[in-house]
Image (spheres, rainbow, N blue to C red):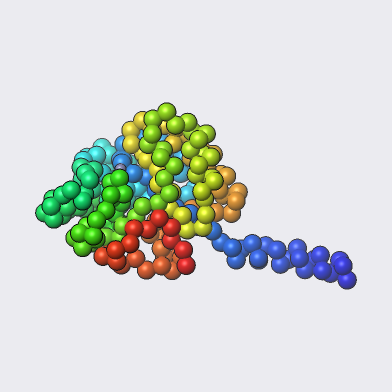
Length: 224
Ligand SMILES: [Zn+2]
């Protein structure tokens, strides 16, 4: 009897664990840059995708190749404006131009304009939600842009905040090498904890959450 119960438990346990499927999305702001290539190397080595929120003025023929590689690895490329301004300080026309230039650049090089937008400094206002025809994304940030932060500190912060549906906000601006180092520990550790890495669009789809533009929300987690 006891043996039967134990056998049953052995068979049921994996099924119970599977029901608790956990998704997490890594995302990177301020590229594309040479550091984006280093991030892609780590993603590729671990066989996972991520989302890249790029700045229009960083996009040129050379960095477009990095964006193409990202897409070929299953990543998506989204908008982080053209010049990284404090958007609420801009006029409607200036807001539109910030979005339109980067949309056109991404469409030129990748064939499709982005659907998602990360406001620089996560600085938003009601007018932006009216004007910008995209889903607004924030995320949990370990403030990995701060100079002097070690890879170990970044690892500790991301691992201690990880939860189902979280968007992790990191930076792939040129020279942010400690974030690249941190990823080499963060990714295997979260895999070990049962997380599946997805892109931001996949996170909405898998969690069954609608994300209409102009909804007035800024998403940091996406949960059912
Ligand atoms: Zn930024």
